[in-house]
Image 1 (tube, rainbow, N blue to C red):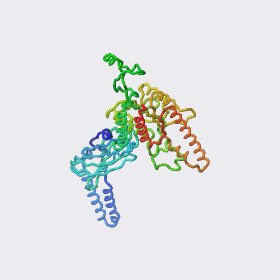
Image 2: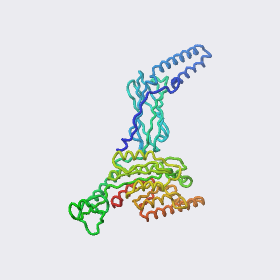
Image 3: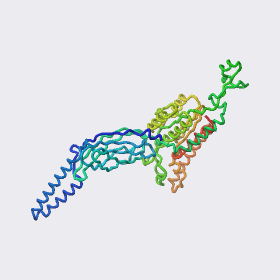
Image 4: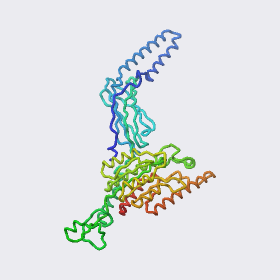
Length: 479
C-alpha cells in the first residue's frame, strides 16, 4: 500500500511539570475532606466532634501528602506518539500514545493529545494504567479534514496512584510537523482500472499499429511515397538501397496533470446527505463553513489516482499546479520515487483567494511539453459576461495536445435549478441558476467541438470518470 511509506515518524520525550508545583488534590480527597468538615456541626454541641474533625482531616492530609510523594516525578514518565499510517483525506489514521513509567508506583494516567483542527475537530482524553518499568499504550483514530502541513502540540498528562488522593500534572513536548495527504487509493480500489489497463496494453501489443507514432519498430525497403525524413541513411549505405524506418504507436506517453488553485476551487462540497432545503435556497458551500472537502481536495485525490494508473500503464506523469503564479511543477517521470514526489507536492498545494492566471499556466505548459501529450486540466468556470480566460487557454493547448478538460460542477447551483420554487424569490433564484447552467453547458460544448474531451462532474464522480476517460484515450491511441 502507498500510504504506509508516508506515515510520520514517532516522537518521544520525557515529561515536564505542567505547573510550578505540578501537584493537587483529587475529587476523592476533596470529598473526604468535605465529609470531615461536616463534623463541625455537632461540634457546636460537643467538642469531641471538633477534635474528631481535626484528627480526620489531619490524617487525610497526611495520607494525601504521602500518596503524592509516592507518585513518579514528571521526568520519570517518558511519552511517545507514533503513527500507524499516513494521515490522508477520507481515511482514518491510527495514533498510538505510549507512557513508560520509570518510577516505583503504579500511575493512573489521563492523556490529552493536543492535535490541530486539520487532524481532529476536538481533542479527547484517554485513560491508561502505567505499571513501573512497563510501557502502557493506548490507541485512537482521527479523520483528517485538511491537506498540507500542520503542527502537533504537547501531550498533557494527569496521573494519580490507585489510592487516588493526590495527582500530578505533566506535559510532554511531542511537537512535530505532520503532512496530510490527498486521498490515497489502495491497489484493491484500483483493481478494476488496472485490469482494464492490462487488457488495453495486450490489445495494443497484438495490433502493433504501425506508422501512427514515433517509436521505432523496424526497418523495411523504401516505398514510393515514404517521407524522406524517415530514411535510415546508415542502413542505406550498408545495403546499397534506400531503407526506411518504420514506427509504431508509442506505448509510453507524457501525461500532465494541471490543477487550478484559484478562488473557485476553494468552495467546499458537502458529502451526500448533508444538504437541506434551507441550504439549497439560502447558502452556498463556501459561506457555510461546514464539513466536506474543497474542490481542490477532490482534484488532488483524483490526480493521485490517475498518476498511479498512468505509471502502472507505463506512461510518464507530470504536474503543474498554479494560481496567480506556479505553485508546484514536476516534469514527467516514472517510478515509485517519482510518484512519492508527486504526492508530496500535491499535499502542499493550496487554494488561493484570487482568480488563477490560466494563460500563464498555458504558456508554461507549452514550454515544458513541446511534444504531443495527454493533459488533464481540472478547473472550474467563472461566471462572467465574457468568455472565461480558462477557455482561451484550453484552446491554445488543443493545437498540440490531447486535452481532457474537467469542470468541477456546482451541486448547490444544480439543486436550485432543479428545485421547484415556492415563492417569487425562489423563482428568481431558480431562473438565475438555470441561466448559469445553460451558459456553462454551452461553453463546454463549444470547447468539445474544437477537439477537447470535456467533463462537467460533481466532485464524488470525479475520480472514476477521469480514470475511465484516460483508459479510453489509451484504448483509442489518441496521443
